[in-house]
Structure formats: structure tokens, C-alpha cells
Image (tube, rainbow, N blue to C red; front, side, top):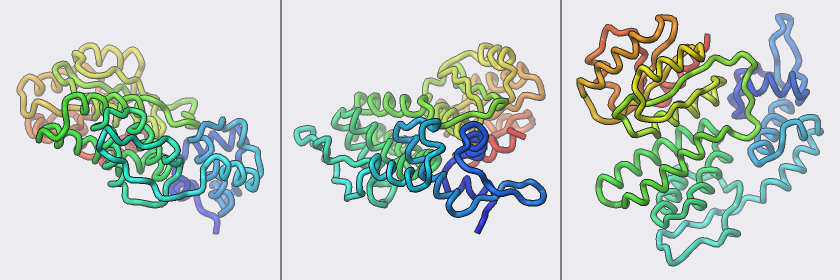
Length: 319
């Protein structure tokens, strides 16, 4: 039964922006139209979208596969994605490395916690390639948004907890951060932005060195159709505002993790709001954001305390 683009997006794991661009620019599919000109997608169209998503995430250029028949896409996907077989447990002992051939591109359905455990084990072995492979497998199985929500955020929380309890060395935490940073800064293969995408500037204020939260904001926004300018951690609010004004950004997002309830950070957030025109949305999130929200109740700031809240704020501000 034909479905609208919102449902096709949900079923395929592709954003509506990507679907429209693949249709218009690459003629990947031709949905039917209602009398009010709404796109409607049949079961085969959704199937094509799923196949195209798999192929582009595995390195195929959308321009090279968009006009293939559904049967050809299936054959190509079967050649790209090996037949699923159980994923071996990744040992934590550095003396027993996992052979490269024992990893598969698309594992059988499993709990997202498997990937969190695999990533932690790889970090303990200082195995950056194993950690990267585990996260890419998770993205292939759950999609970009599923990987962010179900694997990456729990992984970051687990890394922080293990480090605080002495279960991870500083080197383990650093190698995990480096791989996660690389993954989040790299756009998903095949993803496309609309020609007039709204722009979001992402950073952390001076004194805030934890950037993983900001990187997740950047990756989420990019996946939802924003053009992202990522400035990184520990930057004076005057520099962040200058970038936003120069880029004519629609919104600015800051991540605050540590310290909590710091009067200096309160003043920086207030100053950030003063420097931005009222028309520029100001989003603040991160583990410490709730405490600052209580200190700045009357400021024109959008507060988010979870990834779902971030998604809602980003979608709302696109309008």
C-alpha cells in the first residue's frame, strides 16, 4: 500500500531531504502523486530506498547505482553485504586478537548492547580499527540515527563511567574518543544536503573541553538536513557568535558537560544570547545543561537534555 514520504523515510532509514534529492537529481525512483501533489511510495519504492542506502553506506556512489533495476540493486547488495552469520565475541585480552576475516559487514540482528561491549573491548586492546569496525557495523545494521541513539550515546556514557571507576586507562578513553570523533565528523556515504539547507554552528564554550556531546549534535543535525559548521571545543563565545553572524547561521548549539552550576559558564551563556540576534536560535544541551537552565530561566534559550529532545529542537528550528 502506498505511503507518504514521512513513512518512507522512517521505513528506509533515509532522511526526507536525501530521498527528494535522489529522486530529483539522480532519478532513483518515481513515486506516484496524489491529487494534491503529495508523493506516495509503493512497497517496491521503499525496497529500492533500503537497497540504495545499503549500497551507498558501503562505498557505492549514488550516481552509479540510482538507475539500476531493483533486481540489479539486490544482486549488487548481495555481493556487497556478505551472508549474515553470528558475530564472534571480541576478546578483551590483547594477546588474542580477532582475525580480520571473522568480522562481517552485516551481522545477524542483535542487541545494540553487543556493539557497546565490542567497542569497549576494542578500546581496552588499543584496537582503533576494531572499534571503528564495530561502530560501522552498528551503523549498517541500525542506520545512522539508530546507531547514534542506541549505540554511540550509551557507549559514551559507559566509557565515562568505566574511566571514573578505574576500569579504563586514560589511553583507552583517548583512543575511543579519537575513533568516535573521526566517525562523527565524517558524513555518511551517499548523504546529500538540500541546496538551501539551514546552517547550524556547533561548539563548546571556553573552559569546556569535552567535545563528544557537541560532535553528536553536529552529526544529528547533518543527518536531519542541516548544514553544520563545527568549531570544536573550548572557544570564547565572542568567536562563536562572530562565526554565526558571518555565516548567517539560523541557529547556534553549545554543549556543556563540565563543570556543573558554574557561575562563569552562566555568564558565558548569557553573553552568548546577548551577542546573537533574536532571530538566531540558541540551543544548549549536555549533561550539565539542566543546572544552567535553572540559573537562566528567562533567557531566550532552547534547552535539551537528551538526543530525542535535540532531534525535536532541530526539526522545529528548520521551519
